[in-house]
Image 1 (spheres, rainbow, N blue to C red):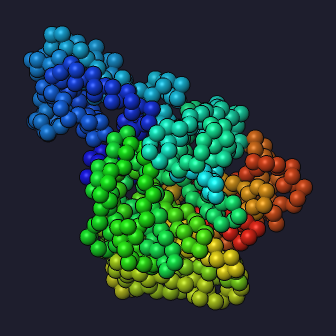
Image 2: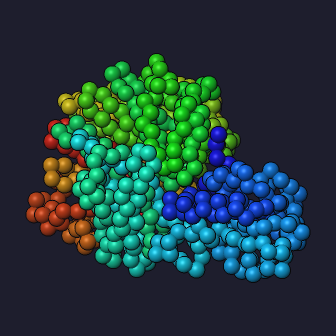
Image 3: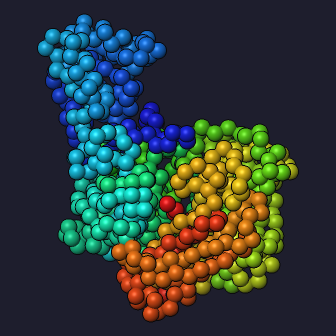
Length: 633
């Protein structure tokens, strides 16, 4: 059963009330609040802002003797709330309630106004009873300020052979933050808290690496663990989402992968989950993001395009983790078939792990939107928006890597996918084009980019997926694909997935080209690049995509910082429009410069003239490598 709670809205952004109700450190207080109401019933519910429905989805109100639900907004009188017809607030005095739940935070003013309406002897209580500790709040004057809930989850584990590292930078400093504190809560597979700690870094834009699984294991004397790490940032400014790079690596170079941060807003469905290829095992990491258990039969899988859903007939406890072999539910389904995950808004963007020939790699699925419909204007926008929405990705050097692309439906309304793939060399010349035609929702059309890009010789380039309406079909701008890469010599693989945007045009369409801050058009770049240490080098593939012709060359700076955010060196680069540049840390900066940067060094890719799209990864000595898209701020 899907949770009936608003988590994210394209126009308003994330729902802060959702984050306040689901914060792990509000869970115990929320349960205590309900227990207290049970002891002092019957209960009158005052719902001034429509919050009680979400509260009831997350906290069990069964057995609660509800005397009535009361609202202020005249338009809501008579409408259903908690299965009852809402009454006008002045009727509260005749409810005969023993307690009154005011379903609101910062309710002191409203409680004072209600004093004259309370039934005799009734005890009022509000959601303020489940506020998180004050030291974790950025704005203590307004509880539902989004900056009070700068949070996220991450898959986090440490075993004898697999370790995880979360790394980011204090990007809040550039938005005026005077200083931050990071609060960490680690849940094991059963949803039990096994470690908690905090970290206050020096002020300024330094690197943040206080989430290394081996370090956590040693500090808290833990054995093997696999679960999820909850991250809360107090003192944030500018951004209420915790962005990070998550690296998974293994002893003996048998595991190496990186993934982007989890989307902090749970979705009903996720897509982009690949079925296993021959010899592969695909494990989906199901991680409950809430204090309420996920009932048996709620989580389900189906082949994309086939509405027959097979459910997991076991519950998942609060904040617990369940590693699910997709073959348990969908035996016989094989790559390049795709799987749709029915998650019911119970978890933030899940990760999946592909295990083959003793090697393992991690990637993430993406939010499948249910609010989109085909946009009839898209086919006619070519004259003004050129290529319009496009999705860029690397074609890695053909002498060493295989590169494949699999278009992935990412909206419940996408019944067809009219797509073409355009391959460009590093100088920005189109050298090949493949028309997929109008793909069906259940397609299995995986394209070998290496074969298509024969004109690159042994070198590299990039591909752009664009809409192609020559054979009909429809589009909504939410164009996605999964890109898979295999190192021929070692057999190690990596994969990444992302969605299309409009890039580098002065024109605007809806909310495109997107900007990191402010309104569109976004025509600048600021990307975070964590850098490999010890035996690991870093690769970075920067792509300069353009929906319409823009500046002939980028004006890109690679700014190297030490762990405290101090600039150590910078390199200036010029990337041709519609071209790309693949570079490595140890080639761009010499040994002396890298030594001056030291451990914990990171880079910022900065360009004030155009919007670049980047991919980053690590390369190990045995041929293992990782690759995923970068994040900006």
